[in-house]
Length: 135
Image (cartoon, rainbow, N blue to C red; front, side, top):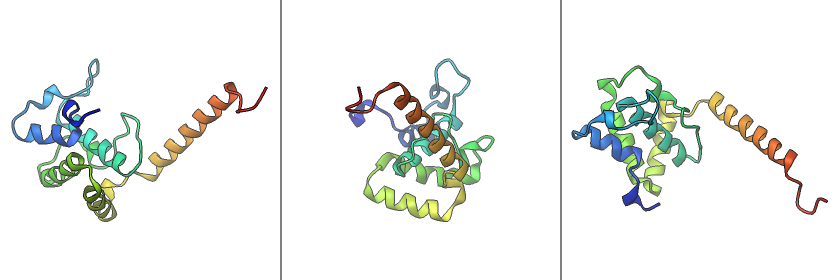
């Protein structure tokens, strides 16, 4: 999808920081709206840049705190910029940040749950889909 047709989470965070109404960002039909939802999506973007695909509710680290603490706004602005750029340099910078800040690292139990879910999904597909060349 062209970047001009999709607002990445980092751009949504930047928009909120410059006056956009955060309550316009969220998931229709759910109570999941506002700045914390935008921050959760920034964390989703950062996981994706690390080649980790989370479920939509797979927030971690700073996105699971109650509200957005003022002391973290500079960090969130930096993370939003990485989400916005999403280039090779951003990935190198992100890795450095993840290595130095546990709250930016996807927890081991989340990674284990992803692997388990993928294994169950593959097992379910192979149970109903014959292997290539099978009768």
